[in-house]
Image 1 (spheres, rainbow, N blue to C red):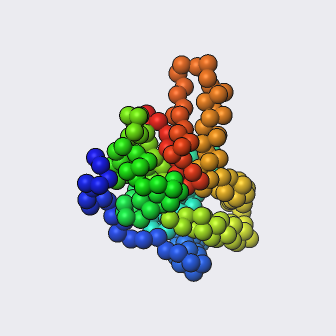
Image 2: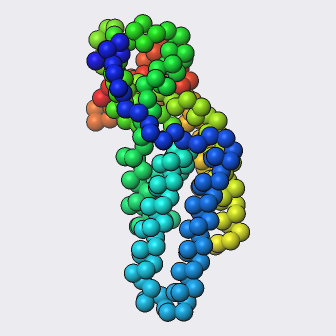
Image 3: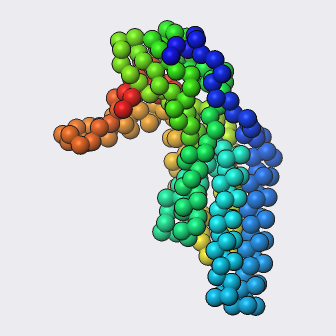
Length: 252
């Protein structure tokens, strides 16, 4: 499907909030509300007994996990990445959270083509028609920091094009500050789980998440490591169609 003939690409109906207050207040309010509900549940567990409150405890954790997912979908950015990361940590979180937080992978709404096309053309320094023979403006995947399109190069190669959302670097920086604040505050109030090591790991890795040049080189390093194996395939990076915010690779 040619970009010139595209109409009505998927539209994001609720834009993620921006600015310090917009990124801080909603997630903080959600966490505070859930924490107060948890404290009240702990009082009832103390009064009525843990066994008598077992079903209510299970319901609370499912409710809390779902509330975090809903907030993450509205906030987007690194909040979604945090949920995805925690959803893979069955070693530190209860099953209710692992199962529910993992659902965030499939619920990220895509951004409209009108917002994403300028990023591709600005990063590559050319129009879509100059860069690609065909480009489907309907994304095949949307994630926390970017979304992916299918395209075809002028030599006929089928490729996947990963494009960062507009303003995502500022959102990531703001989210990192907020997550650190929440983790430090939580550590002063609760001793059940210490999230600070998780935040430290995210602070170390997040800057590289928004640098697709780094991601492309990492892919090539991994390809070299597994170069003698036939059961591992790493998509080839097309550097002439890649930049810091756009990454073009073989479509597999």
